[in-house]
Image 1 (spheres, rainbow, N blue to C red):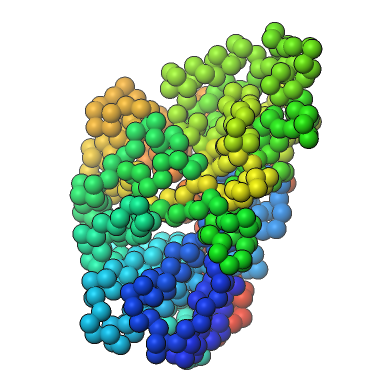
Image 2 (cartoon, rainbow, N blue to C red):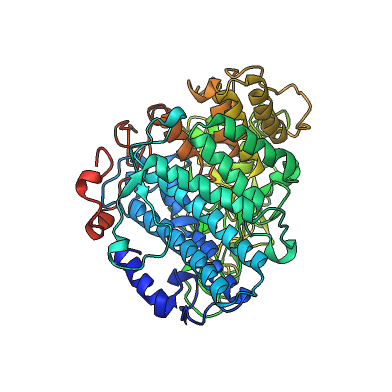
Amino acid sequence: MIKKKYIAALAFVLIAGCKKAPVNVGPTNQYSSSSYPTTITQLQTVLVSCYSDLRDVGLFGFDFLPRMLGQSTHVLNGNPFSFTSEMAANNLTVGDGGAQETWNALYVGVKNCNVTIYSAGVLLKTDPSVDKTAVNLVIGQAYCLRGWYYMQLECLYGEAYMQAGGVNGDKLGVPLYTEVPQSLAATQVARSPVKDVWALIISDEKQAATLLKGQVWPPSTDAARATEWAAKGLLGKAYVYTQDWADAKTTLIDVITNSGKSLMPYSTYHNAFNGANKFNSESLLELYIDPNPQGQYGIYSSATGTNSATIDGLLWPPVTFGGYNGTTPYNGTNNSVQFLGYGGNFFIHDQNILRFGYTLGNYSLVANPKYNAAVGPTYYNQQQVIDPVYQQAALQARTNNTTDPRLYVNALQPRVDSVQFDGIHWALIAKNPIPQTPVVETPLSSIYGWSLRKYSPIDYNISANTTVTSDKWDYYLLRLADVYLLYAEACIGSGDNVNGLEYLNRVKRRAYNFPITTPSVIDYKSLTDVTPAANPVSPDPVLGHNPLYYERWAELFNEGTWWFDVCRWKLGDSEAAYYKTAISIPPLTFNDSKSYVWPIPLSEINSNSKITPADQNPGY
């Protein structure tokens, strides 16, 4: 946890001896600015903290996607605990633990970037012969990441998004720290105007792109480093988020045309979120995760020599029939299932299954004609199996593309999909027991109970494995599909509907395994054309006839961007109406005057004299 008094303490220590943070990234080291850094290698060790903070508990390390954004956007449903109930209801309080945790983590990231930029200046002054190109590459990465941290802060805590012509620019944004404070007074900073925050974000990404221009990192050792194209992609996103359509189009088409990146083929894309296909042709900025935390417990390890890891998969794991009690196999019923992580937390919200266009309802069970009574009931010798007629229809929905194929990138279907529960043996997915106990497996059941697949352990048990007690997959901070969709939005915003529609279709064609630049039978014909969300079982009146909205939701599902789109486009009421309920929160509602913005944490108000209760966001 960080407060401004901690930043002040850091400032004083930095002049005589600085402590690297955050502490959960690795061991604490002390160094003096008079002698450190003295080499590029030492400067790189300072830069590391800019990246490692992304794995903080309040960011991708544990809570941000599952307990915060996963709840606020209803990617997930599940048992409420801690601050998740407030997030699911989108009705936060000023003491909300999640909002405070993420605020703290993001400002640690800002601080680490500022320390890196400061340290680069120290090195340039103490050693005029140092390789200035190498120093500038370090500074460029720090600017790129600082722009990312500030974009998250502003989108979550800024009073309003700035719109075309600077509308909302004078509303309250977040406090800006652009250098390491040199006194206690310098740590007390008021909220800046929204326009100033976006100006800094844009400036940071421009500087990063300039300093990183032409740099190609060795893929075997440095693939996770920020590049010119990551910075330009984030710059384009900032322009879209502030409705600067002209600059957005120029910047984003530069990334599309000149970055050397391309959309993955569907076969690669389908398996790019579970540990395979890291740093692929589509990745622009990717958080590297080492799946082996050296026998320790993910991000909570403080042991010397442990690697950085994340453990989001503990909270949203698949549920399978596979497993053993000692040497006895599970019996193949929903009374004997295994969560490949923590049990009883989250599952994919049923309304997402329908929004992707799945219309077959629930299945029934029939006697297994291949059941071997001599073996007895096991997960591989079940007494009852899914109705083969339903199973065939479910498989046809995939092969015929009557359901959006991205459903199967993101979710696992009970009794149709399988996982390797121990990394070796395969077993069918079970219906998630969280929403309905005992589990009902008939067409009359209103509960789908699918498991999450994207960013989820599908070939090991993250809580039971003795060597892999962390996530195996990397997290995408920016990929080319997002850039395509941002470019489409910029085109539409500027009146260029033809190119806007084409880039929406390019993303859709890849998802449906068509050549991305060739018109196809699945193309949208207009910007109000029907989408899978318009299905007759649970038609969505908004996403069902808005390909831009639908494609951003479907393509970037569970990647941490949809909340920003909901807030930019003011979709809170329609989202609450579509999802209807969350466990322990029926019915869902949305407060337009409050819920689009998270509160400035109470701890910040109490420790920063320049921010008073009067400066709090509306409704809090």
